[in-house]
Length: 114
Image 1: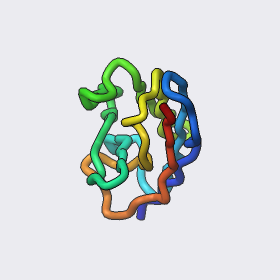
Image 2: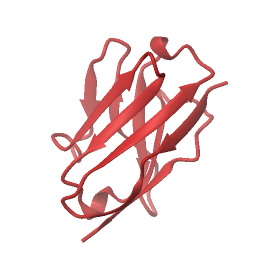
Image 3: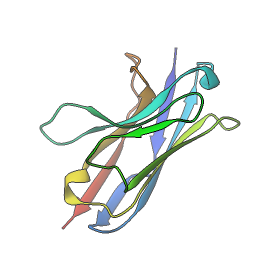
Image 4: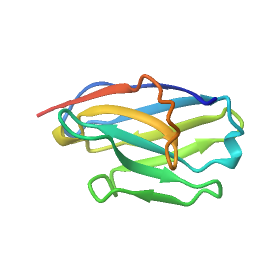
């Protein structure tokens, strides 16, 4: 069973940056495509960035050019670097497999003030 522990969120002004991390355990990390998901207030959780086993990345249009996803195979860690943050980036961020496993972590809260 996968265990996901996200960290790195916080309160930041518009235009600022944050770097999220997610420690992954319980699965053979190197064999799974992974992603970062976001749940904004009042909205469904959505996939914003993904990275395949081979390192191919894909981004939602809303974050393309501002967010960078990466993975550290040795540390079994997912990373999400977020730059030029906007108030609409506010939400709880989760990492998970792609497609998502039913087990989710607690997420990390990101609040972007205008």
